[in-house]
Length: 219
Image (cartoon, rainbow, N blue to C red; front, side, top):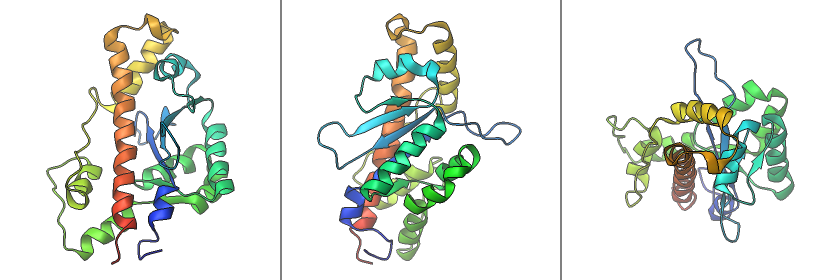
């Protein structure tokens, strides 16, 4: 294990987590996320899957059509994820404190267990950049892209979904309330859902790429 508390094996065997939801409200409250993307690089075959936290999003789950996808309430699905990490000796790696905050707000009884298996990659990424006097591009609004530019220059940047992830979640809530079968959704509606999931997957992959960079670093 190196100075960033990572190595190649830890990185390869970790689960990469990223939430998508409506984000912070005007009253500063943070609602429960709509989905969690999970990337498991250690799996054979397709490595990305989605946890859907709203039963009404079943059409999106059917449209995504991945065997490891799950739909259910937030606490139950996050309990299963934490148990997987505990039993298999894996870390759950995420980008910033946001993921921990979501657990603290919406499943506080899981926080202590999550802290034991969770790993916030943003802290060591900042140390890596600061040690090398690397300056982030402040014109790049997405923080994850700032670090991709610094640490993995050959990697493409993450393209934001259109509409924004928060707006996409609101629209999909609306679509799901009116049409309960994926085949009844218009191409435009399907496109909103697909692009949200594409964006989430790209986030998970970017965190993996940065983890690999830090895991391979000797100083």
